[in-house]
Amino acid sequence: MFNNDDVMAALNGVAGPDGRPLAETGAVSGVSIRGGKVFVSIAVAPDQANAAEPMRVAAEAALRRLPGVAGATVVLTAERAPGSGQVASGPAAAPARQPAHPASKGPGLEGVKRVIAVSSGKGGVGKSTTAANLAIGLARLGLKIGLLDADVFGPSVPKLFALEEKPETSADGKSMIPLEKYGVKLMSIGFLVAQDQAVVWRGPMVMSAISQLLRDVTWGELDILVVDMPPGTGDVQLSLAQNASLSGAIVVSTPQDLALIDARRGINMFNQVNVPILGVFENMSYFLCPHCGGRTEIFAHGGAKAAAEQAGVPFLGEAPLDMAIREGSDAGRPVMAFAPESPQAAPYLALAEKVRDAVAAEAPKGPKITIG
Ligand SMILES: Nc1ncnc2c1ncn2[C@@H]1O[C@H](COP(=O)(O)OP(=O)(O)OP(=O)(O)O)[C@@H](O)[C@H]1O
Image 1: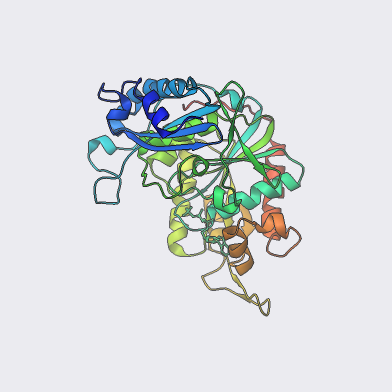
Image 2: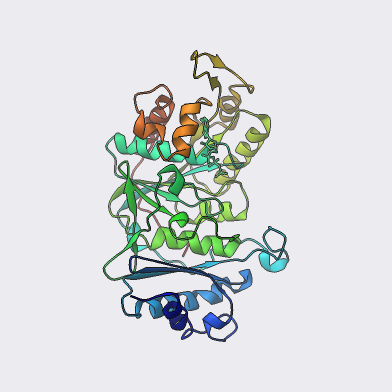
C-alpha cells in the first residue's frame, strides 16, 4: 500500500507553478488517502488558475501511475492570506466573470435532463436544508435525482446526509461515482477536502472545483440535478449561473427585509443571464412551537411572497422555523427522509411537486456545460 511519502514522491515528478518539482514548492495543501484512493489539493495563485490546469491533470496522471492507487483526484485551491482569515486581496484575487477553462461538456452530464439551482442572496437562510429536502422530495415523487453541493465555501451535504465516506472512482480512474442516500445521488467538495482544512477559495478556483464536480462525476441518468449554489450574488455565482446551463432557479429567503433585499438581487442575477426563475421559497417563515403546535410570526411573515409578486415570479411556499427541521438537518436526518408525512415536511414536498410540474411543463433541454 502506498503512503503520503509515495504521493509526494509522485508529485515531485510534476512541475509546480514555479517550475520546481511540485512537492517542493509547498503548493500541495492537502493529501488524503482512503481505501486506495488519493485526494490532493494544490494551492495556486488566482492569476495562475488557467495555467495550472495542465499541472493538475499531470498530477492526477502521476498519482494514478502509483502502484496500488485505485483513483486520484486533484483539485486547485487558494490559500488564506496570512493571518487575515480572508481571501487574499489584490488584483489577482478578482473573481472570475468568465469560465476559468475552455468549454467542455462533461461525460457525466450526458444523461442529466435538467439542472436546477437552489440559491440564496445571503448565507444561513436554509438554502442547503431546502435543497436537500427538495432533492429527497423529488426522489420520493419517483424522479431520478442528483444533488451537487456547489457551495464550496461551506459544503453542507456531508452533514445533512451524515456521510463521511469518500466517493469511489470509476474503473478507468477518470471520474468519481457519486455517493447515494435517501434515493439521491450526491457529490460535494466536502467529501474530498477535510472539513477543517483551512482553504478559502477564490474565483477561478471555485469555478475549477465546481466544474470538476459537475464534469468528472458519473451522474448517470438523472431527471433533475439539483445544485446547491454558493450563497450570494457575486461574480462566482453569476459565472456559475451563466455557465452551468441551468434549466431554472429557486431563490430561498427568510422573511426579514435584509434577506429579501438579497433575494431580489438573486432574482436579478438569474434574470441577467436568462435563467428562468422557478420561484421564491420562504424558509423559517414562522415559528412552530414544538410544545403546543402554535404558530408565531416572529419576522414580518409573507415578505417573500410579496417580493415574488413584485418581481413577477411564482411563490413556491413557506417552511416554518422548526426544531424538528433544524435537528434533522444537523443530525443528517432531513425531515423529508425521516418524517415525510409530517407537517414540517409538507412545504418541502409541495415545493418538490411544484418543481416537478414546472419542469414537466417545459420541453426537455439537454445540459450544455460550458465551464470546466
Ligand atoms: N426551517 C428551518 N427551521 C429551523 N432551522 C432551520 C430551518 N432551515 C434551516 N435551518 C437551520 O439553519 C441553519 C442554516 O441552514 P442551512 O445550512 O440550510 O442554510 P444555508 O442558507 O445553506 O447556509 P449557508 O449559506 O451558510 O451554507 C442550520 O443549522 C439548519 O439546520
